[in-house]
Amino acid sequence: MRSIVAFALLALTLCGCLRPGEERPDLDLDVGVASIEGLSVQVVDGQATIRELGPNEMILWAQAPVLELHISPGAPTKLHLTVLNCMPGAELRVGQDWTPSLQTDHPTQCVFDVRLEEAKVTEVLIAPRDYDTAESYRFAVMGDVQTALNTVDEVFQSISAMPDLRFVLCTGDIVQDGEYWEYELYEEQLAYLRIPIFSTVGNHEVRKPPQRWHQLFGRFSAHFRFKDVDFSLVDSGNASIDPKTYNRLKEWLDEGRDRVHIFGTHFPPRDPIGGRNASFRSRNEGAKLLARLAEGRVDLTLYGHIHSYYSYENAGIPAYVSGGGGALPERYEGIGRHFLAISVSPAGLGEVEFVDVDSP
Image (cartoon, rainbow, N blue to C red; front, side):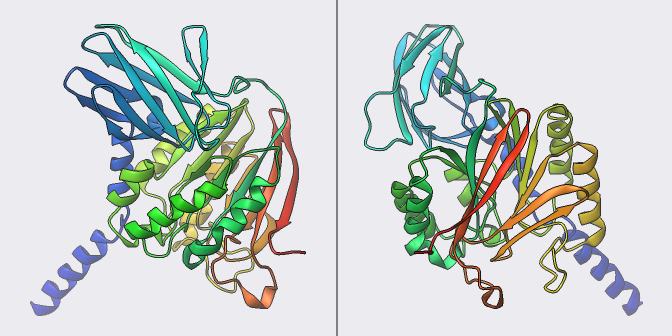
């Protein structure tokens, strides 16, 4: 009898561990939706988190280069809208009318005054005017800062010194323990980054309750399109992807099937050299993910977690590990702080440049 009870308890324990990140996909659905008396706001696809909302003021943290908002006031009003982590030069469009941002202290802070009509949904677009122009551009990729938060400004300054980069993709592990003071320091260091950074989480962010990330930065998994190229950043913070997130990824893969599609997550599905087991906790799941990415005709996969640099292929798709944000490096490989600068266009991928932050 005791053995049966022990087995049942073990089974329940194992079942409870099958979805260690199950809260996060549900929290994703809450992002970008808020209301107070006389005013309601929806950010389409949750591509920005609403940090503050008052009768005449709203503050957003953007998770995508292009934001669409549906705003419904109960009475005519003027809304003072601040967008943090905004694309430099972004403007606000209502109908066919574009309005430049008011002057601010930093290029990734955009500020607008929006006039809202009573009992009417105002549809707002916030983006650079070239957001839908099909042409080549470059973006940066980095990950794994962790205990180097106090010096990540040097990485950000190196990124900012390349004037043609439009934004940064981060594959997670920005912080070491997910403490609020770490996120505060991270935002202070972003003063040295002159383009926005769009990130998923790694295993270090999820050491603390997920509400911390959710309140400040929004979704754990996000999808967006910029200049006719699709991007999917997916939460694998527990060395796995939740079933609900797989369902969303399928939608994103179907939607971007006929466009260039770039996929990023923290853990590589399989360790590129196999010596550290620095990959998904299930080899079967790693194979499952790669099969789905191949079926979805993904053009590029980007990973972090390993504090080094690798260029290889997985499931026939070009793959890069870039974990050079400053976390303790893989010393025997001799690769330190770095980021990638990647060229892309609707026609396909271009050059992937390795940029050494500490080289003379």
